[in-house]
Image 1 (cartoon, rainbow, N blue to C red):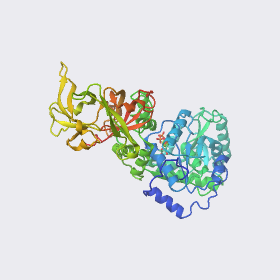
Image 2: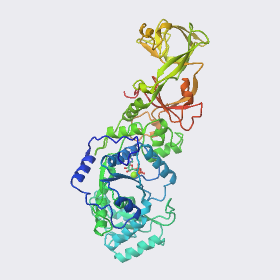
Image 3: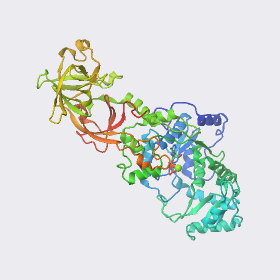
Length: 588
Ligand code: ATP
Ligand code: MG
């Protein structure tokens, strides 16, 4: 097994796609064969590990530690780590912490946790962009010296005005051709804290009239008198993301820098910058290449950080790990599995064209995996009492229920049967609709793993509500005995003994939004919240569930997949979250 996989993580299957074709062409051409995995300047740590490492390709997952990861990030993680696994390469986890303002250790920890939970291992390749600040600064001085950058003292408005528009070329400002020595002096003053925020910036000197606006002398350093979560107050100038990112990739000797489509217009700058730094001997060849793919767009959720923050801050959900949220901490608490995510990433593939994936594709992947691994249990979610009038009071007998229908090796468990049981309210009808095969007066149905019972009627309270259903059992029909098949019935219902049942809180989660495209057009996305996305009930569970460990997953027969909530379950009183129903009820 390749080193990026944890034991138990199956390698991602090998459906081809344009990124794989690209990598295979590079490998066939020997693009990286001569690479020494050494290189000129750069953080020693990086090169020390890289030199001894036979990785064929290097990818990276580069989150900004300013929020919790979501389902879209899962796609990117599975893609980058999956490629490294597939080609015998390495995938780096790199925190892109070049912006001092919004980044926090809390996010760093939760991101590491999420990547590991998904089943991936970065090994020794954990990096922080802020560790490269010294190199980035040296590279900036080099660019000035080589005539590729200058300090611009125009105001923000002047700069904007001179930058032109999509249809009009930009115009050079008054500082563009200043002597390198002067820019260098200014940059050093910027670094020393001599100048106020916004008073000047360092810009690359490329082509102010370029049709690609990103090449019109983009800003590469700005003054920010802010404390950084790792470098503290060591710096008061910070590199722009577009400058920092290619440098980070190059220092780590990333071969394929895979990002989402909105960076396509940045690729010329990415290439320009790395070529200039390689020409100057600051970086080793071959430099990384950027490849773009379409981000994940999923119906019925929002993946924008801003909207997720709003949902949490305004308390539309209970926190970042609310099981309704599309965050990975939420999905995990909901009961979604890493295997389900990897299956999903493989199924949706990667493409160059933006598209929408229906949420049911993700749910199906979870169902498929849970169907394979979740043991079965009986749970009555909307209980009404069933009284077997011909069953002796005080008697109890064992029924044997298989833990998994396709995996007999998982054995059977005892389910006690008594005279009074809980059944689902909807499994009884006083006047049955057409095609109803379960309990109604005069009809027989099977109690799973127990007997066939014949319904005789029901009791009602003064308001006319049904409070108990009555039946008689056919003693020769017990499941697993020779007489079981003598009476044929169409209905087959689950049940729990009232004497043994464990009453438990169950949260019936559903999709957070009721519209496929929340906030489409100009509508406020909050208006599309699904008010029924969390229904809390008290269910009657079979006694074996009383001692459920937190995070244990089960299929509740006929209902769906459930997980014992790891925050709110207590020994003897589990709380269950519904992960997903057995069948999709959303497809119209
Ligand atoms: P921001 O707007 O703050 O940059 P972001 O969602 O891009 O938000 P990052 O932390 O920068 O967050 O993302 C880390 C990585 O995850 C990036 O490489 C990005 O391309 C990828 N990523 C983010 N959202 C998606 C998505 N919906 N589908 C696929 N990849 C995504
Ligand atoms: Mg981003």
